[in-house]
Image (cartoon, rainbow, N blue to C red; front, side, top):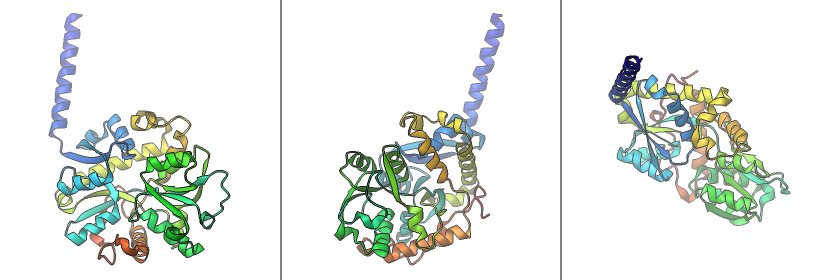
Length: 331
């Protein structure tokens, strides 16, 4: 009996060594993540299911404290990929820094008010205090302010009190009734809706006013073109893993219990709303119609950027910005 136990232990030890050796031999992808960002949900599940190894690579997460830190890490070569803004990536072309973009999410910012607020549209917020995540160079500000001016002759700068702050702080201000309305990123807006707040205007509705479809990706994977030219197969393996991980998240309620960055942060009451919003933002295609809508959106930003100059000297998005992968393909 003792011999059998020893033999089993030796076999398990050898198996672990072999598995470890295989993992050590795999090519590595270093992904920059925000410490508390929603990208961790997908990566938690992928690691719980040991999907990176099954798809032939080693996944290393590099946790950073801000979107700016992610951009700096990508530029400096400390990470290989991040999730970020396609507009930032496009602007880098002005400086000769070439990146690729691949969709990560279509979930966008949302304008939220108190459930009892006497407001039926954005025009009813004139004279009110409105919070915005990010600054005046953020797409949320540019698009919502352009929409208000176009549809209600409502100049947000002149006819409302605007407070720019970090997303968590804006939610706190909203919950303390120190804001009349807030435009916040999707998961913060979803959280508010579990606390007696309601949506007044979605980004989908804002985009539709310019005949831009709801499937336009708001953010996506960013990575250097020179790195991509040396690692095309590896990148496609990564996106295949990402696609399959998110298919699980989209169809299987039980897998969310394997995501500690989700279950440890959110109450059981908030989880169904967040899951619903997350699933709604999973991209299903990246084809010519999507890139055409991205170009349309870029032109809207160009026309409404004012002194922010967020589009730089670009007149359109560089076609080489868009990465194509079999994961979403061109179907």
